[in-house]
Image (cartoon, rainbow, N blue to C red; front, side, top):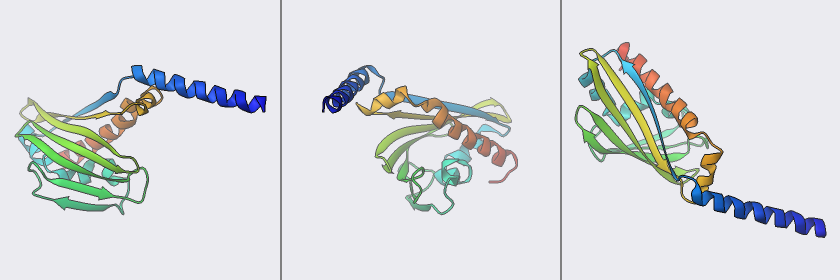
Length: 182
């Protein structure tokens, strides 16, 4: 009985310690990746502003070929929604909405993850002309983890986890655009 009490006391101390540590751990994180595409800026922007085109280059869109998709609104305009639902836990269910377009420069998205975990994030894709036939595309992802879940940031490398997926998507985008596989 004493051993059981010590184990429970040790677990309680560990939980309290994690809760205290979580008070001091950041609650937000941002991940960003970029690629240079050998195409004019307007051509690249005209492609990325359409949310449906992400189905052709995003790593996340290719993780489940049987994923159910739903679209609402007019693509390429503020308010357009792309929804997904998958039986695979690493894909889950959610929606992405175009929330702002800076014509020729940037598109901001609101991501709403519904399953397997509820969450929200902001994403942004920007284009920058390097010369008349080269465009730098930057894809960023910003999210928050509420207390006490933010303690997981100490144990998970969000930059690597999300950044690798962003980079795969950007590399796919570069390949598709440069080969005119639109």
